[in-house]
Amino acid sequence: MTVISIIIAIFVFSFIIIFHELGHFSFAKMFDVQVNEFTLGFGPTIIGKQVGETLFAWKLLPFGGSCAMEGEDEESDSPRAFNKKKIWQKFLIVFFGPGFNFILAFLLSLLLTGVAGVDLPIVDTVIDGSPAYEAGVLPGDEIISLGGEKVNFYRDVRLYTVTDAGKTATMTLMRDGVEYSYTITPAYSEETGRYTYGVSWSGERTKVGFFDTIRYSLYEVGYWIKYVIKSLGMMVTGRVSANDISGPVGIVKTIGDTVIASSESGALYVFLNVLNISILLTANLGVMNLLPFPALDGGRLVMFIIEAIRRKPLPVKVEGAINMAGLMLLFGLMFLILFNDVRKIIFPV
Image (cartoon, rainbow, N blue to C red; front, side):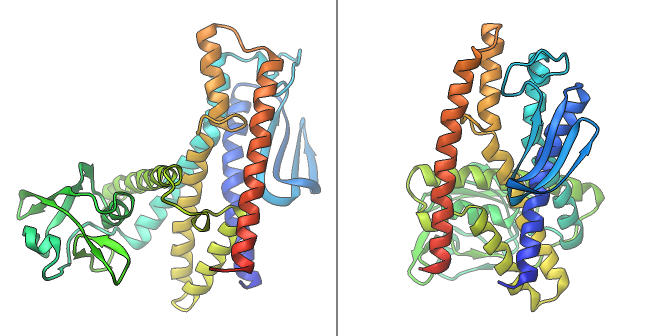
């Protein structure tokens, strides 16, 4: 990787994290919660500036951030403390960290769709003798659903063939205003090492109008959320190996490699590819933070739901012990992922 590509990668990663923390910060201010510190990164402080009650700081390791509020993790008698606020206010403050990630994904999708267009799920080629060919699929057909899942982009077809590899599925298409449905079993390709239905896309993205740009941008966010959730499912079931999992170091390398590979095609392609990765990363951060795991935003939201049901908060010691245990497990997982990222760079498979 070049220095420029590393700088671009760190900037993208940092911007997404800042936007996440800005969600917490904005809603904390909306509900008059005292914010003591707003930081990018972990470790020793490189630059810090006190603005009113809040210390804004940039720390050494730019792979994370925080929006530290008064009374968030400890008891506080301040009327502006987080723990003094109503349950629904605390819920929204925590939720809109991930929520801002999805908003950012939508804004970036608007830009991507407006500039590059959409990969509409229109069949360009049907391979002779393939399952799709035998079923009766024709070039020009528009795929509208596959395996009961709505298809908005041609990428939806590719994702389905990976996450539901080898599964017989009903493919519904639109042809001259008439719907056709075919039950197709994909065939395994020795050449690619994957299952395939035997259809392909032209590779050309289609520009759409103003309102369709908004609609497809929402679809874009939905696609990446689905992508992350299905990828998590493949991890749980063991269908994804350690070499397929990346942490901050691996993500920086991926962005850097993308910048280098795209640079031969010009600045616009670099921009569009980095934009595409940024949408994936911010959607990924949103989904991951909503997982009901202690120390993550999702874990805290579960605590609030329990608090609402009990009509009183959990004892501070109990909640603190749960969060600490989750934090230790999280740091252990981050260390393993970091080790794996470095191993893949030094000893690539």
